[in-house]
Structures are given as C-alpha cells and as structure tokens.
Image 1: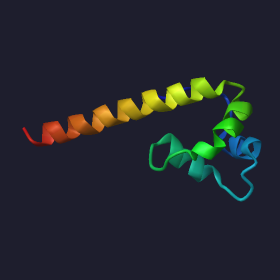
Image 2: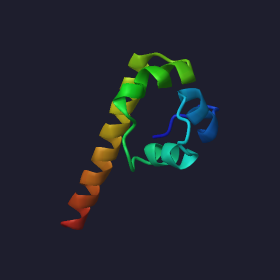
Image 3: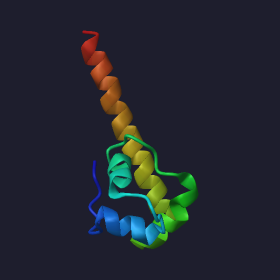
Image 4: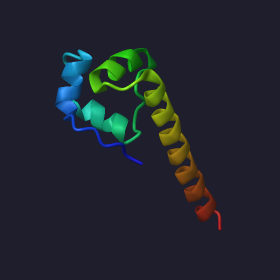
Length: 79
C-alpha cells in the first residue's frame, strides 16, 4: 500500500544527499525490488519531515503487506 508524499524521486535523491544515485533506485525501493538502506533512515526522516518511528512503522506495514501477497500467490499456485 503506497504512501503518497509529494516529492519526486529525483528530488528525494537530492534531499538524501545521494549524489550519483538516479531516480530508478528510488523506484526500485518503492516497488520492493531492493531494500531502503537502514543507515539512511535518519536522512529519509529529515528529507520527508516525518519521524523515524513513522518511517519504521510504514516499512514494517509495507513488508507485512508484501509478504502476505507473496504467500497468497504461493498458496493459490498450490491449489
């Protein structure tokens, strides 16, 4: 389940200070293709003006949602 924050992917990379990282990386994180680096949680919190706790809670909720979806796919494939 996406969270809408009105910041472009390229703007977010700038706010994170990730010089040389393109917006595709952010897209991959959003799609769950690669994890967000935990050492950058403080930067993300500052960049989006939300607390570390909110970010962690959102990441946990997103992971649980994606895990349930994948388990559902496996269960449906086995029936």
